[in-house]
Length: 253
Image (cartoon, rainbow, N blue to C red; front, side):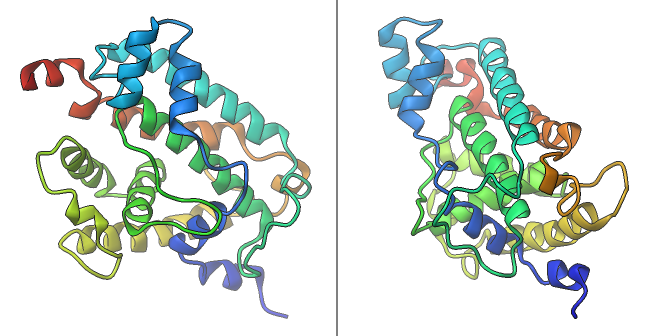
């Protein structure tokens, strides 16, 4: 029988993400999410502008967005920690045999927190559903996941992505499939490094920096600190991006 480690080593990051996007609970509705979080603190006209543009454009300060972001991370971390990976997947979800269900669920929750943080910090709607993931969205997901896993070069790529959103460079560079375009070398490097990083973190049995997939995850014990650390890596990167700074938009007006 083939060693489980050898099976996992063959899994590409794009494959894991593609499978995770098919899980029904993963997709976050940008408009509903921003309205739900912002209406608690801001008047309707500010919320509408934040949805139409983004929170920073609407004048919402980084410290305020940061508080909401931390609440989001706490909520999703507690949720993923409490749910048993073995029993938590909704029925009827077609999973690739090569991608274990507990890994799919873990990355599904990473995608949830990734989207929510992205929407708070100025990103546009992620274009994916249970049947489709656009090339632009897959590239963005890989960059964000690279940041979460601490992959070298991912933070610089996130800055380039923010520049594209801000209109400083053409968005077309993000719309190319993974095998084409000028951003391909960056994405490919992240994807390759991410694969190595995932293998080390997922399979380092008993290590303190692992993502426990088969043992603890199956009994609902996905590590609290691992998920939270990954989420905060992304949060800290988003805080530095110009699209999350209200002052940036004041200069543009």
